[in-house]
Image (cartoon, rainbow, N blue to C red; front, side):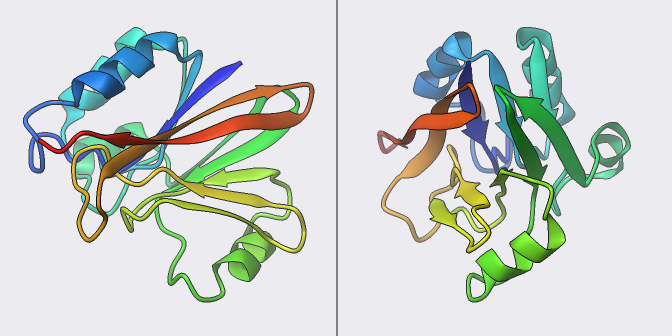
Length: 166
């Protein structure tokens, strides 16, 4: 099963539209995990229209309309793994411990907010993934998103994709 992980799309505040490379990747994904900060309900509508399965949450920049449609935490079983999606996880220092304590029932936690790509494991085995942002690189050299494959209880081919500068 092909996964696309994205966060902090911030359309139309940080970009008028999603980058073409991301849109192409969307066509190959079976499941999309979006860790919040959509900003625009039309972007959520686009994702909902194009994906059989969308596992998504709202973020701190999402207004009442998005908050009414999306939870703060989402969970899904995909390819034999227990996934969770949340927008914020707090400061980088101590993140693995905090998340392992908060989400002891997960195998993989996808999060956003910082716009900083992240791939680590907690001592409990919880894998933490932040895809960065495809539209707002902030202090990072590139805008980014993640893809991965999941099957038979294994997450593989986790790839950070760097988008060309606009």
